[in-house]
Image (cartoon, rainbow, N blue to C red; front, top):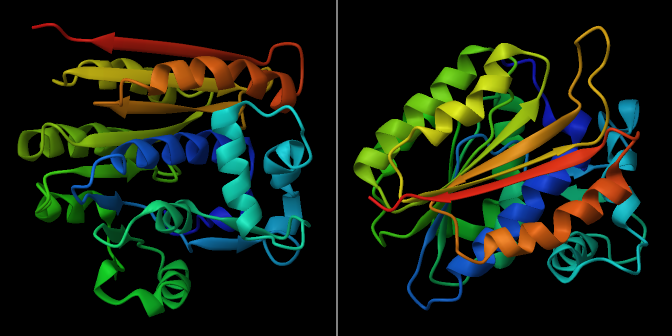
Length: 283
């Protein structure tokens, strides 16, 4: 489980979807003056070099953020995300990619706080170095985010975005996601929970959205982006999905605008597609 390093995949199509959605969720929470927390159960290293180290081995960013970098027709919500990434590359050349925690830091206000968990010791050390200057605003633990989440909920301001995006190298992570959400909702039923997952030819991955739909929430939103046909041998990720519990009412329309564009620009063959579902439980 601890072999996973997100640096290999930084800035790929899955990061584009995940971080675009993250930006929209944080923007929405920041519309009210009341503080909120950002909680990241699998925070990674926080920031990734795209021209050195792990990222250059597969250069997955070339099929993700790089395809959006010079586009002049980005939909408004997507342009906001790309502009944020460009802030970390002030010379205009794509060299650094911010992970979820660094994206969140850009959008949090003085009154908001972050709680970050990362189990991989090397990435946790880098994460702590990246955020050393922020004191009590950002607390980092080298810990399993699934287990640590319980103690944080409900957060003191009773407002939070909880991002859950484990590597899923261990198939037990799929069950851990469902369990963590079930327990989290008991403690903090109105929190905004965002789950990232890979599109794989694997039963656990294909079943996860339906399992999440069964959780007791007022509303949920499910968006998935497939950039290519599944491989004939059944291996490899052909896309990814975001499942949001208690989503902002604005998010569906933002995704409805952006997802067709992502298919057009990030799609790698004629079977590239997106799916978008929303449900509000009336009972």
